Length: 112
Length: 114
Image 1 (cartoon, each protein chain N blue to C red):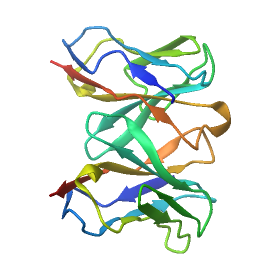
Image 2: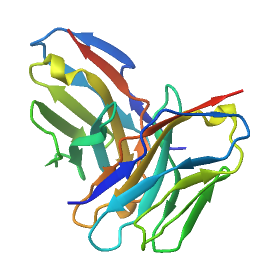
Image 3: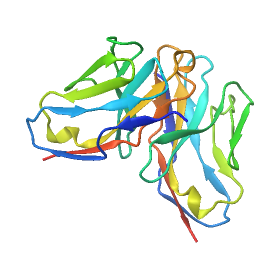
């Protein structure tokens, strides 16, 4: 069945460092891909999405490109801030039902 | 902004108790969802509902039931709480036409079963 694999955390970086969080997927057909973020004490919120191959989603300085050839949707940011500390979830939409298929989440810690 | 409100942020219950987790959304969304979030496992769907009085099982419905008597309210019920149901429970909603595009989440209920 469909699945999402994320790099294990926590990922610890210094402020202004470059960020990459890896996400790969297995799916039939052409799913939509998402990154959600969960700040401490809050619910998840959609960060960005891409609906077809080669699409790039972007928001708040974060970017991710839908790579069909490598079945990947890696999250990147050029210069992270302390306020980016959160848990990041990669997800895909299953075309067979209402479900989103979720990765395990990657905790990001940014030190000043 | 859409608001999804979960009734409790933290809850401590005893094994065998019947537990009710309440969720209310204020944007007239058709779809509502209950997930549990466990470290290293991501989010797992327990139940979802696409209309009043309608419900569908997710991946892990065992030990849970749900109720949706009104469009804005979706309740998760643990019939007889067990220690393996200690977890973070997240409620979410979405409009019908974008059910897989964007979910709006509550801030979660951390349930501890002792």
